[in-house]
Image 1 (cartoon, rainbow, N blue to C red):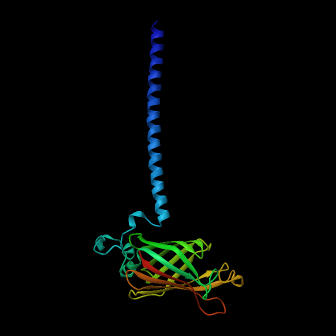
Image 2 (cartoon, rainbow, N blue to C red):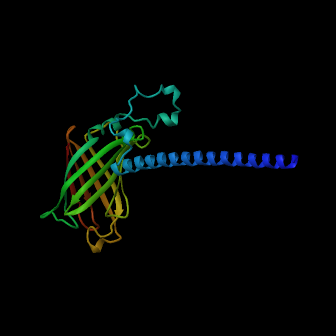
Image 3 (cartoon, helix red, strand yellow):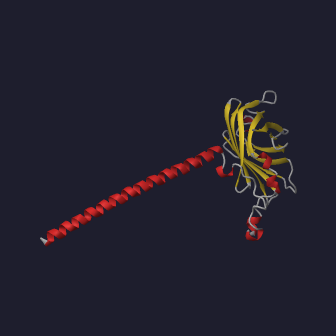
Length: 247
């Protein structure tokens, strides 16, 4: 009889333990479901930020001023040399949302009959603590969808502006660097080279093409960006011109 009671007690204990484990399992599953929901929400937020072209916390930020920065003595020298300065602040008129009137004079257009944009807009936001200005341009060009992602910044170590773009036509990036500067200016020139995939015609496929971008800041509500190519054996050509008007 004693053994039977011990056995029943043991079974009751197992049953209680099993119920407890089931409860814990249900709680754990619920917790995982909450985590999954939070993760999905976070992923959706990141996806929306990516699609909108910027860190959502940086939409209205401006380059950090020295007044906002920690005391210089608290910053290591290597980090202090990377703080935003007057050359970054000079780009502030480019931040915001813009209507873009773009014309392209090669490939799908010509100087006589340029391909023109339709419904094209650009959004620019600071990221990296005001060190880099991100540009996302979307719309239509010559009747086809257009997309470009660009990042513009100033290298303190090199005392020059740098500009890199990625688009939905070329499988390579476009990288430009400016000359060394001693003071900010409203006109920025940057140069680089790229390997043509045929934009200038089949004769230039695989050729290295020098290029030059000019950014002309005409005020807080308007600026121009022009792109020039210099094909081998030919003079420099204006191939793309965009007029930006603040929305």
